[in-house]
Length: 364
Image (cartoon, rainbow, N blue to C red; front, top):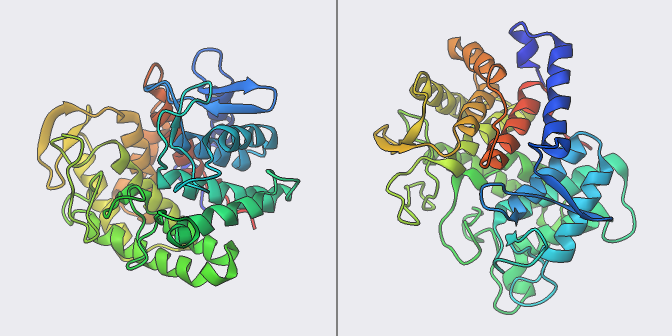
């Protein structure tokens, strides 16, 4: 992967320093961290805006740890996830409860599929980087089990429902839903699952990768490049939770995901067009608002403005034009978020930082 910071004049040693300092802030800062040990062998990532631990953040933290070669942190996050979030019976057997309080008590029973896909990818990377150990640290075994349930839950568990719709290979917003979340689509992960999942499911995962790349194309607006927070299987926006706008927090991740898929598996003209339109639409609009996909502005401030800046910058991995340099430099000059909403913004900050630095690695 190319280091776009260095390409645009930032010294390589400054980039490495920023990566280390960002990781240290998230995990060790006295005032700004949101990783916490629960006990001697488990720890959690706190959603500081909602005072809970979510499979989203737990799996994000595991991915950060494996990228930074911190097996100790990885194992504590995984132990917390298995001990407090994993279902060993019922219709969600093999899945993870998406939210628990800081002591591990469940706030909800149902899963959120973006957690499962990040868990599986982080576990495969851990297996390839460090090797499997005894359960539950037999990382590749655990990853395959997660993916087996994601695809076959309706066959494995009475009353269960798969996380990917069998008929179109698209990820569901939740297992019970027959619609999607564009930001859940990680075709770059699925292309790797097609190498490492159960052999009988590898064709499925390649089909899922192809389907998600096409879904990202149809779900992003042709003029603004924005994707909706939630969308039907045909890409049509779906309004949810009484929110009268389409482009907000979850949807910011789409640009970051397009950037990483481009870096790992090659640039695509449709991806380049999406990011070009998005970067053109958003440039100069700070402070950001909430938007409809056609560009209409809603008079409500974006809840996660740092996340929007950094993910849009990470999309630069998909394109190369006059806007790329200014977005990369805007990222470089954007500080980490502080305060109560820092969790989501700073998770995406770290991932986008690794991407633009060429340091978000595939471990094989």
